[in-house]
Image 1 (cartoon, rainbow, N blue to C red):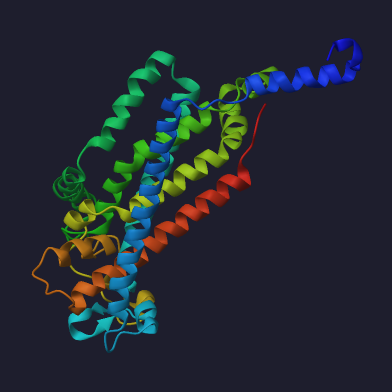
Image 2: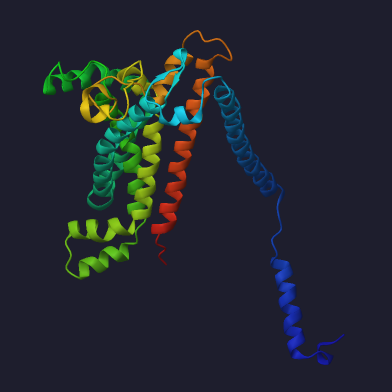
Length: 333
């Protein structure tokens, strides 16, 4: 059929369809292999997570089926001694929260200040030198940090506050060193978020007469709020899950207390006192699992109940991180 017998619009449509067919995506064999490999990696990650949750849930269920163990006592009790049928988880949870809070008080200001300096003030040459050096801290084994807390930070605190106030094992030194450990995490993620802010926003602020400090704190920082908030939440998750530092420096036994009223009447003997020894959730798991435990005993099953609670806490923080990112995320063209 000749073009003379076909309308001009039909010819244009036919040519467009032919071009689209010629430009259609043709999957190469190598691309198919790579796509399949990436899918396999994702599937393995998801299945591994599901397997962990299944094992934690299965063993934790055995713990809660033990005679005398109830959810009410588990979530409201203030004494944790499974060997004598006391199953209140709060001494371990409070020690974990105290340690993590101290770590955040150290890591968040230092990490954010470092990120602002690297992103807004440091020259490219200085940034390329300082950032890898800072991230070396993340590669130091945590057991080294633990003994650093025990042999350096604790004597320093005892010198400042007195030997009678600060015990040899305490959550304050452990929390400070955990904070030092996660400074590179906070600074690296926050610096990436700050560096992603368009230069046009900075130029606009300079054009309006803003100083470099005003531009950094009032323009760039709010624009990168979603990434910074995500960095903070990830750092909190890292602090909550830290094991070796708290196992070495915080203490080797839960700091039980007699009821919630004792927090106000005898604060020094509660886990809220950062200068006394206390055992965190991860530290307790390390100590108990390192002993001679018989399979299916109460102590053995309690490890998985604590691990499941710790998993749920971390999951909640990650979900919070995603909501914060979605709430404050700004998209620039």
